[in-house]
Image (cartoon, rainbow, N blue to C red; front, side, top):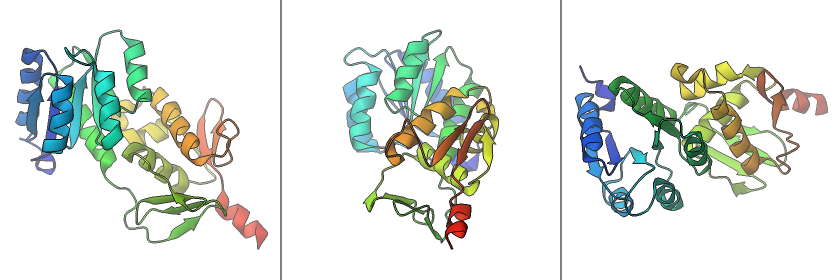
Amino acid sequence: MPDESYRNKKILVVDDEERMARFIRLNLEHDGFLVIEVYKGMQAVQALRDQMPDVVLLDVMLPDIDGFEVLQLIREVSAVPVIMLTAKGEEDDRVKGLELGADDYITKPFSPRELVSRVKAVLRRTEAPGTGTKELIDVDEHLKLDFGRREVWLDGELVKLRPTEYRLLYHLVQNAGWVLTYDQILSKVWGYEYRDEPHYVRLYVNYLRQKLEKDPANPIYILTERGVGYRFVDFQRRTDEKK
């Protein structure tokens, strides 16, 4: 039975192999998704504007412009979750996609179960954590967090975070002063099925540091516990000590 919570979620599939696109469409439709198929990169950019999908499945190899160029065009106008479809063994493609702003990747060939699981995991990460939290958090005189409004302010400027970055920051801050292991972070932010992929954590911590830290190489907010995980600075204790 399709999961009703995902019914009518719209997935844009971009793959020039029509048999592969049809395979993906049939399996996603079986779980209640709405699927749009396109076969070229520029078609994908136009479909993004016209259809406003909830997730994009984007193949790296396309006949007009490659998937990385499409991803860059998407990121200029949208924070929609993007899952890259990469060839088996192409580690460089996976890393490049994540660095350019992809949210995940799936290596071909993949099973229908893995495909649906990855799409649902990305959709879960777009859900706002902490929407019931009304308190404005003053980390220090520079960094302010409002999880109720999904807003992050640095030196009076609103910081734009992608959904996964926001979710990671939320869980780090909610456990400020405590070390979160790679496994704990992966489970909370990405989902249990990502427990063997710690590189996601390192990459997204780096993204956050680039946006929040004055000197990302010497962070004061998101601290590394070498070989274990990460810890957000214990701002509450520091505030209490100043009183």
